[in-house]
Length: 286
Image (cartoon, rainbow, N blue to C red; front, top):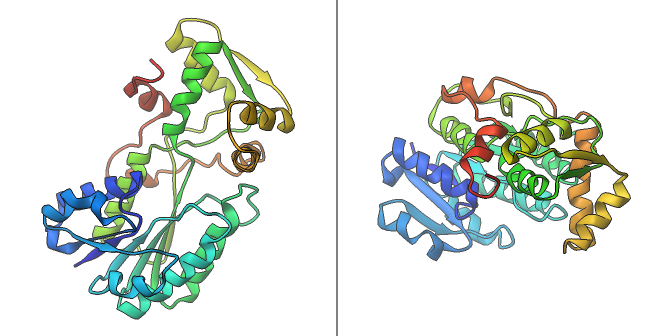
């Protein structure tokens, strides 16, 4: 069985590729990317590395050719990727792909996170394509809490408008492990999995972790959304980016990201890592 991975030069894509090459013969692994030169070592190891660009639909048919299952890793442009993903699904179908696996978000319908509408559109496109599908609804990455904890340790404050909102943060490595497992196992067709960490935690939990690791008190400072945006802009983020980031805070505050499941354990056979484990493994926060 030959499998394809889009966005294979990204952080998640590379990790999935590494796991696939531990399970499959390299000749069964096809890596799709806009930058094939970035994956030269994989090509040298026997994997097929093919140029594919969601903005160039003509490149996609040949890229998917000869593959049976494809992991569609969501693209980065929230405004355009719904259409990009839809074109990729159609190209995969035309090329003979039988089963598409897509990295989505928890509760995409009604979710205020800026990423949600394009995720929902892609899920609809996959359902309507006639292909077998599996949706991996990845929670927010625990890895992104490392700089949050580091800043809280340094400043003694955790500034947030999340209120008591909790998030079932998941390690990117656990997302990769789940994706690699679904690509190489049977019986996942037509299923939707919420890929989460082992617990849902809120700002007070993150602050408590920072205080413990830093050896000094960390105060949770509750502010409104405008203050959060202003702080991100002051730190150098463009306003549009700041508001996208804020949308995930709103999603947490409104309870769209707090569901905890056993999906990682069920699919991979391994327990998911916690935020504490991710932070403790990093040199940035401790």
